[in-house]
Length: 158
Image (tube, rainbow, N blue to C red; front, top):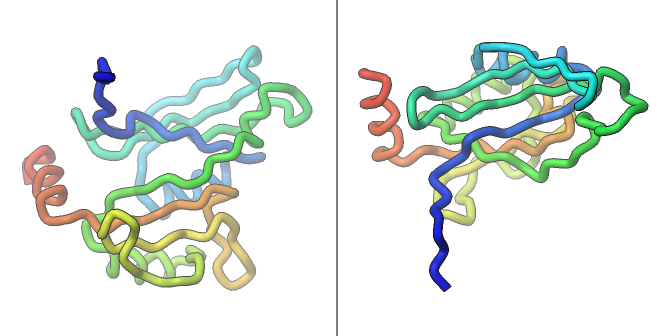
């Protein structure tokens, strides 16, 4: 059977939590994403910050969601997400900087992932020593190979 379409990449990831404050602390303060707009819908029970990483065809939307009413449906803060993988241009430097700024990593350190790239995982939950976690979402940081790094650099005009 021939598939009539191709998956080209990640368009968006949506991450929900009880409060956008903790989500913004990681995604905006630590990872450096900008909030480009907000979306509030009583019908969808959501107060959402719309962020983005990358640009042009490489742009990936990151939606940070909290419920308007945690007792109502849809429960945007309770939808599970196994993990999301993010290309990183310098993984060791990222791990060093993020750790120094209170981000908690899952055990295992940097290692080869299933696709052959060096990877590591941010822990889904912060703790006392490292208070910044994925707010329930496991986040995989992936060392981008040189061709991916250069493609993003070309796109950014660097």
